[in-house]
Image (tube, rainbow, N blue to C red):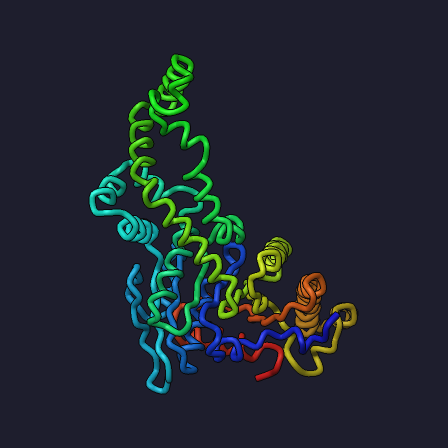
Length: 381
């Protein structure tokens, strides 16, 4: 196994490197991706980068943390201290608006109007599984193409699986180009279906009774209009996918020291390697490091034995402190085992840790503190 020093994720080197143009924070839901993304963006901006952070966090905590009244699909400037040498903007993904923008770009005005007014499209663009992840990638491509920022930090959607962010473009494409969609949307009297005659009409009639005749009509109209822009959607998805593989992109996998979250992180690291996507390292949030000093060398068994001795002697307060210390040591040992198992399984992936805080982060100083914890992880402060 590689040494502990070689495993450290050097966050400052990552955000300072002008070759780093995109940082993607990914991981299971509820592990602190949004806070990590915001902290990385803030630290980069205060060190001279011109940064934009895009979030899909439905809780909208990022706006409050950044000192903004609200966030929307337009990048908003974040107020930074005077000594900051860079700039920072933040925005929240508007899935429907982003989908509409792509349709308008690839279709003529009349065709775009037909698509945008179609009830099937309105459902697809707001609630179909994978659309949010697809549009997060689409917005990333738009921001990169604009050239307005030299660093884009992406907070990936809180999906059931972190892999959804990479799978969404292909999944949505397969759906739109799938056989079932083609079957349901094909006019009964045209093409190969003409040969089926009454048999096809019977099938179509049965399906119509199940899903509704109006649904079939809306679907047919949608596919007919969307065929002209589908190639553009596929091309853009493939271009953004290649952008994620480019040397200027860095993936930061975020986890907490819990079995399920670390397993999800491991799956994602494997997927990144399979798809030849550049992994910068792993951020483990909410850890419980031991305080420095002689007490850190007192193991759990000795602390428990000392506590039992003091309890028998009637010294309940120091005994309670020793038992708390023993519990903390055991928690840290469990966290270390999870960490070392993942590092060993993935060839010494670099790691940065952020200690658990007594409360959530709700302001810029709190985010700045997270950034400092990431930057100084494992090297003392």
